[in-house]
Length: 185
View 1 (cartoon, one colour):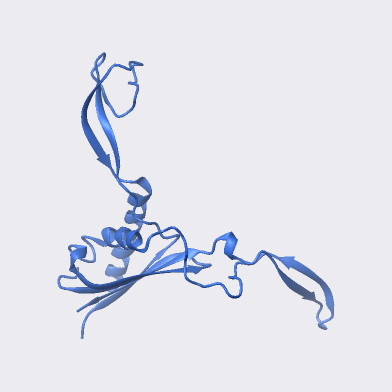
View 2 (tube, rainbow, N blue to C red):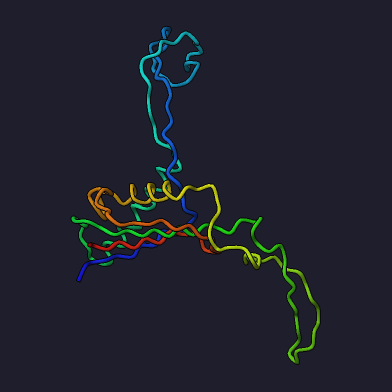
């Protein structure tokens, strides 16, 4: 029987962001290195040294969150890092956007004898009838998979190249989270 593990990452899913590139420059006046257009000494006389790449800060934070919950799930199940080919299914549940939620619904307030006292409009988070529970947001499915898989690298598996079968599903929920199912093949 093959080993499997189920991991839940609470919170809004985050897509893998693009790396940012800036130019590392050296101030000709004081010699400091900076990526700003003006040195801390106030000089604008800078010499370009090299391009510098740095990751998106939201991606780094989210991948660290994925690492934390993956570590906790692996410890709880006393699982070892997967070594062979894997099957990985990721389901990303996004917060229901205001544009797709009911604005208000009618709620009746009754007394102990079920006599109607008042009807009030209260906000709700249910999808409109006829809407799909599938997420139509701008988060690309492949970038969600990248941020989750890169966050699990070195904890659940050596490299996400071990994944032979996989899927990413995007849905709406009133409890945003990511659920991951990993199985050995």
